[in-house]
Image 1 (cartoon, rainbow, N blue to C red):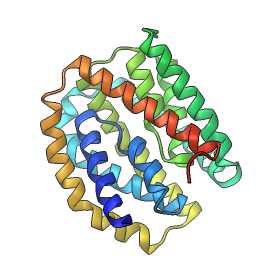
Image 2 (tube, one colour; image 1 turned 180 degrees about the horizontal axis):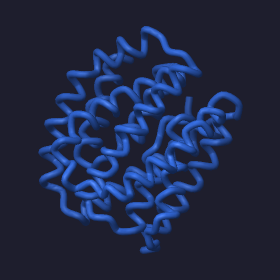
Image 3 (spheres, rainbow, N blue to C red; image 1 turned 90 degrees about the vertical axis):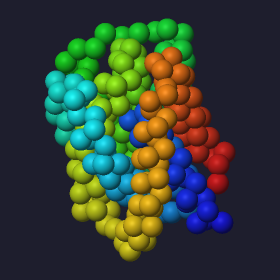
Image 4 (cartoon, helix red, strand yellow; image 1 turned 45 degrees about the vertical axis):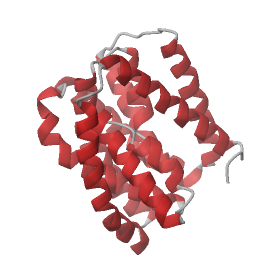
Length: 241
């Protein structure tokens, strides 16, 4: 049963990541936590997300916003150690509760047409929040997704810039996680088994991307954010096993 669930989780999350540039960690991590220990789930997520980004970056690099990418990297470099400190010392349920409420609040604001103007300082701040969430709960996506949605970034730039950023953030986070939290055979064997599923998700997700217009893409974004916020909220208050 757990193996079947693992197959479904990885395949769907891979399709989502390939077609949108985000979503693997948002969708996979909560469910992987039902199967694996927290450190294992986070590290499997980091490894597979990194593989997807590596596989896609050559195809999408022409659409990357280099300026935003650089500022995200600088900001996240400061946030990564903060997130690791949170993971090692602070009650994660409290963190998940705060993150869930913020995600839900901001998503509803976006659905009500709230928009923000992008600038360099906000790029750095969002990168920092993303970095801290990567090493603490394995989810760098929500702050970036909220930010890009609020600034009405087109789907090509969103996908490509996010994937390029993930190359850095997932590599750095994996090194930090393994160094401070350790790793084990389960992480690497499970990741190896998942590679064919990721490959299938890459193919199907690329087909889906060509068929999604900007309006449908935005709806996808809201659904994913609402799911993430609701899941983290339920998990933090003990509503999920």
